[in-house]
Length: 105
Image (cartoon, rainbow, N blue to C red; front, side):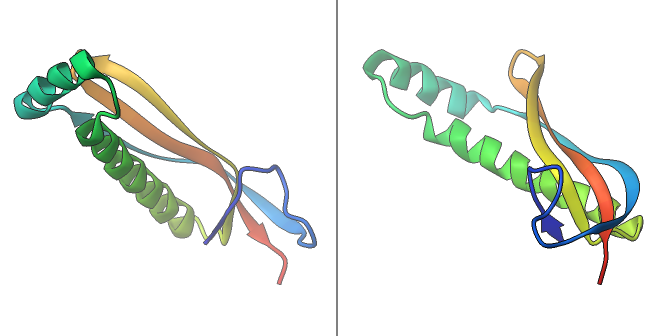
């Protein structure tokens, strides 16, 4: 599956637009991570546990989007984006989305 953030692909022609595809996941922090993060806030630096949490969430959302695009018969996704939003304090949703397309052979 070819995934690009641009609206088209250089040297390739889009044969068919299949529609918007999405994949999402909601992840929550845990108490242990919150305690360590609060301590890290005192001295500064990267909150590694949160970075890993969001990295995993992005990978899962992307995988789910690819599954949806594949089930529609797509061989590429254009205009790909990630979006993150807070659902409740301590929980965030990560959405991967784009337009599923069929490229000419």
